[in-house]
Image (cartoon, rainbow, N blue to C red; front, side):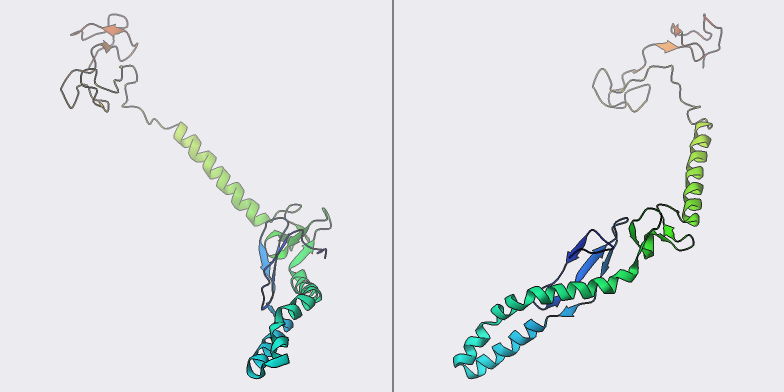
Length: 209
């Protein structure tokens, strides 16, 4: 049977009764109907008990429990689904603007009488805008903060010691074998390569540490 308020539902029925879960087309939330006990299952159980007590023809009737269930399960299943649909139907509304059926709990804006897709809830939009603004401001603050003031990006960086191949972790000498890692020095201002022992850069005159 076609269900007016959803395109997706799950049949959770078993041999003891019927139960269904209906999903919101927009958010996917599921809403469970009440469990309905199967009358054919109860009838089959009574016949089986009587058959075990008396045997004979009555026992054969009890053994036909599953045949009884198979014959009646179709119409009973349909009636149970109809009843479950009527139970869950009040939990959904149809938006008059877009025509979509949505759940009241999550996807319905009670103030506007429309779904949240057509009329988002104001408080949720404010919270989202505030969070977005905070993230943007943090990024701007980080961009305007000097986080690399003590890092000399002009000096060459050696990742592994050329002698023993140990990781250097940014040092000037290898922690494993003591070999020098920076063989050439560069001006801290203009990057000009300096000879050993120079205190001032011959290109720009900057004093070297």
